[in-house]
Amino acid sequence: MNEDLRIALVGAAGMSFGPVTVYDAIMSEKARGATLVLVDINKKRLDICYKAAERLNEDAGSPIKIEKTTDIAKALDGAKFVLTSVENERFKYWKQDYTIPKKYGSSQIMGENGGPGGLFHSLRSVKLILSICADIEKYAPDAFVINLTNPMSRVCLAINRYTKLRNVGLCHELHGGIERVANALFTPVQDIDGEASGINHFTFFYKLMNKKTGEDLYPRVHEHISVFPLFWGPVVAQLYRDHGMLATSTDSHVAEYIPAPNKLKKLEYPFYFFFSQEWAMRNSVTMACGDRNSRIPENLIRKSGELTLPIIESMTTGERVYMGAVNVPNKGYVPNFPEDAMVEVAAFCDGDGIHPIAVPPVKESLAELMRLQIELQSLIVDAAAKGDKELAFEALLKDPQCPPDKDKARKMFDEMCVKQAKYLPF
Image 1 (tube, rainbow, N blue to C red):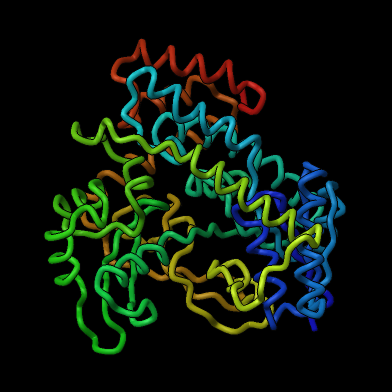
Image 2: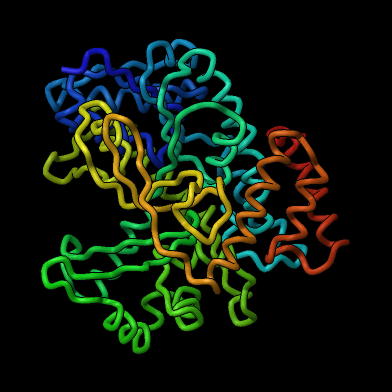
């Protein structure tokens, strides 16, 4: 039993990680007896998520205790782990992040983690996460923070640069990339050993191997991309042709970090709309579950595959486990990247925390693209933490998806600043 294990989930009413984290905690044998505190400033949505969580917990025999609160100080009291998955009015501002830069000629594809939209998303997220971290440092300074908030690299850099909290950032793109390889090669996903490195949402496989046979799978991937490029997406396929490396993510993410080729400039990825619809669907299911108007058969529910609970289990029990992808400050793990830049690499976890694994140098043609993004990480995080508007504008001008001239970039920047003033750091 783990009656002294207290986990605070900040942003529990969000539909991206809230419900799956709750279910993973309920199904964790090693977390039995723990207390999971659901924290959110939106009381109405928090109540919905709490009802659903209680229902799932009761159906499983109540292996954990579940609490809810809008008071973060109360939630953090005694917390050993704090999970952060937070946004302010996500889809309203994502739509602005996407549409306004496009109006001024930006070539951005998605507007979430890179490009002008990613800049403003970062400014809002860093301001929010640093305010939460200030509370954690005050009420639970020894807690371990697991960040799930995007833009991952920039948010994690802010935590590491401007707080003293122990932390790690998690993303599931590596697993999604391995699944795509498995589907393309008609190979069971559990038989594929995929290892990748880079920066979040822009990592590339340096190893693809069949665990059972020891076969290098890259030749088969090369053949598949040559014959079926649309299976991978035009951006991923082009990156492979240019650099000979397969991205772990799909077009919607990797295209945020590169100058858009002319033939891709007309591609539209209004993910703010698709994700808002998915969010609404998840919310409806959660409401129905909490109101006991429906019952989800247990045999249809699976653990999410996220690494959040495995890290908590490992650090609590001391059991050493492998993590395929974690976001941490570079301490020589990627030899051709600057020190302390946020990198995504594999790691081991045990009772002492996260132990990242050193990887081969990133292929130089890709590393050059990533080092520009690392420079932007630093500028944007400092701009957000210091409330420096001109530093943020400098970062915009350096972005490969900036509007085509400085005058248009300034007009776009000023319009965004006015419309998003409520949540910006300046």
